[in-house]
Length: 356
Image 1 (cartoon, rainbow, N blue to C red):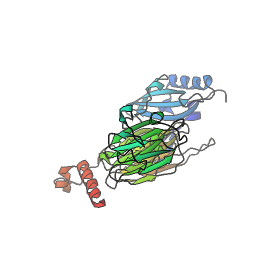
Image 2: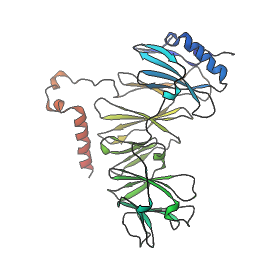
Image 3: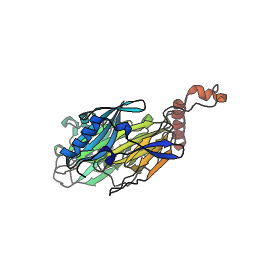
Image 4: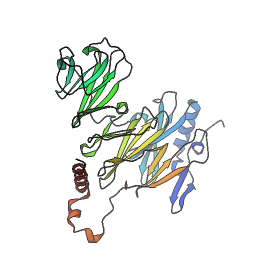
C-alpha cells in the first residue's frame, strides 16, 4: 500500500452493556489530521505508532519516526466533552515525564571523609561507606580502625582511594539510599539502608525510577517495592529502562495505581498498592490501558506480528472518577464525619503497631 490512512492504524470501539462494538473513525476524521497522518508515513519510512498520551485536556498520538526512542512526532488533540478537536502535528515537545525520583541525589564531598586505617565517608553521621581494600563496605559505626561492616560486596579494582568512587545518597525518613560507582566501573550500584533495622539491600531497580509510597511507608519501583518495615517484594519481570509515568489514587485514598512505561518496547507495568495492608499486588504488564470513570480498567496486549484481533482484559478497580457515597443511614456516623482518607491513614498506622 503506497499511502497510509488512519484506518490502517486506528480503530474505534464504543463501550456498551454487552461489551465493545466497532464504531467509525468520525472522531478523528479532521481533514488536516488525515493529511498530516499521510505525510508522516511518506517522510519517515520507519514511522510506527508508539502510544497515546493524555496530558490535561489534550490527547497526543505519539509516533516513533527513527531508530532512537526519543525520535518522535505527535499529533495533538483537544478533548472537548465527547469530541476531539485537532490542534497540530508539532507538539512532541509537550510530552514530558514527571521526575523519575521523588528525592534528590546528593554527591558526597571531601569534608565527609574520615581518615584512619580503614577510611570511610560519613553520610550525615548516620551511615559510613567506603570502596577501598577490594570491597564496597557499609558500616553503622564511625570506626576507622576496623574494616568490618554490616554489608560488603567486591569491587573490580582493589587499589582505589575514597576520592576514586562516585558516591551519591538520599535520606528518605528512616531509609538511606546509596548510588555508588566504584573506580573504573561502568554502572552504578544502588543500595537501600534501613536505619531502624540496621540492614542494607542491593536494589538496582531504583536507578531507573523510584517513587515514595504514601505516608512514608517506603519506596516503589517498576520491579516491586521496599517498605519502611524492611519488607521487600521484587518481581522478576525482566524489563529494564522503565520510566515512571503517573500515579492514580482511589477517591478514598486506600489504593494507589503506579504506572511505569518502557519506551523501547511500548510496555506498561501497572502496580497497585494498598495503603492499609501495605501490600503490592502482582504487576499487570500490557501494551496499553484505559480507565473508565466507573473504575473499570481495560488492558491491551499486542503481538509481535500484525493482527486484526487483540486480546483485552477488563478489571473492576477502586480507581473511579468520583467517590461512591455511603448509604444515607451512615451519613451521621462518627466514621463518616472523620472521612475516608484519615480513616485509611489511621488503619494503616494500627497495622504498623500490630506488626511490632
